[in-house]
Image (cartoon, rainbow, N blue to C red; front, side, top):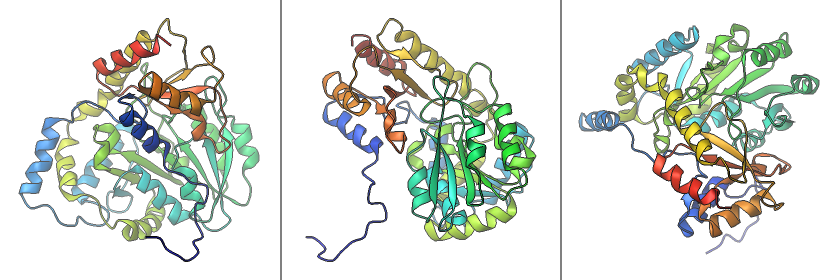
Length: 384
């Protein structure tokens, strides 16, 4: 069956997400999947029990559109404890079904036809389509290798009367780089006296290494007053399939966000919200997450010593970039496919995170895996 009329695609150049493609390829060839960013270890049994408890208690109908107030109150307290920032749970915190939804809702609320959004590349693959679908235009700045740092002078030169937003991500996917306090101060200086809004994707906020503190936009009042901050329960609690997140923003920005959110999803999973109200009280879980993932990072890097891959810096997130230039001069997309088919290990080619498919001969590997999985993967990689 096929529709006979004409169709004008809103995203004519979009294909199936690289994550779906590489995961399907990994499944087809029985390869170890270090491509898609999800843990392969179990979710906390206590959290599952809490969700089940509230399902049995009948908390299975619509939650309030902005999310349970009790959960928003807990998030407000957590944010204050971590970043000394005060957000009103009634008017400045919104529970959303995942960070990708949150980013799209922010773009829909803020971006109008012809608006420009400065995007730092490489970038998560939902950013640019979310901008384009709302009539905006992405303006790109590339991170500088090998440390993947932002040249703020480049950003400053791109800001003009059409600039509606600057989109940042720290810790960064796919590179594992982070923004420090000096970066935030430079950003603050650039947007001072303008109407530019900040959208800060901070879903890996609890995964920074070597005793470095996360520099949330929330720590900087002059930025916070013009910012949407995207956070993720899925990343923090290893429940990526539950699609749960939240957005912090000043009241006047939140009003516009909720206008859009209510017509995309209306509300977010009810029993999980009730469970999170209780579970979020265990501060050790998120406070110890950096140490947990640093052990994973260090172990994976140790296993790869002596290989022909060059380890790139990794300061946060649960992704490690490997440079393969000593092995082959193939395009990263071709090498990633061959690696999956022949060596039975799946990764993500980093060029797909650039609008011009910039190829620096880098592959992204997810180390949010059991040690046994990492050992099996490393055994294959060191033989290449």
